Image 1 (cartoon, rainbow, N blue to C red):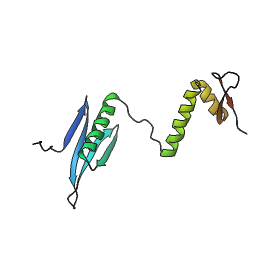
Image 2: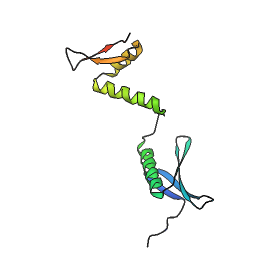
Image 3: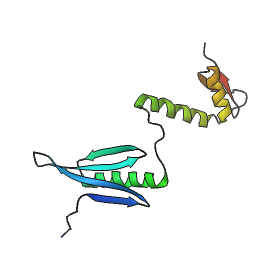
Image 4: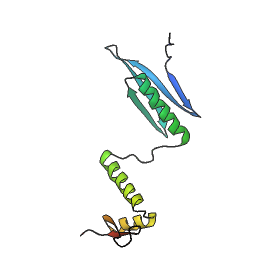
Length: 126
């Protein structure tokens, strides 16, 4: 027979701790609220399943303990554009300076040099 978990449940990783609270709705359904602080912001995430709440809490505690905090929060389309640009820069093996200069000059397309596939060159679209 399994032991019934006690709430609030604290998930720890190093010195970071994340708390899981159990809530009961008027209809008798249970939900689980994962609560932790990232910097000065309090984050609350609700899950319907205890296992999913525990996974979320363990992930959050691990990220807090290792210092992997979100410095920048982007919306979906902005994130997609950012990830695509990073992938393009890595595939083309551009240095930070080359990529920064391309953005500063307003170049919108990065093409490979047809004469030397390993040396990229930048092209401005008209």
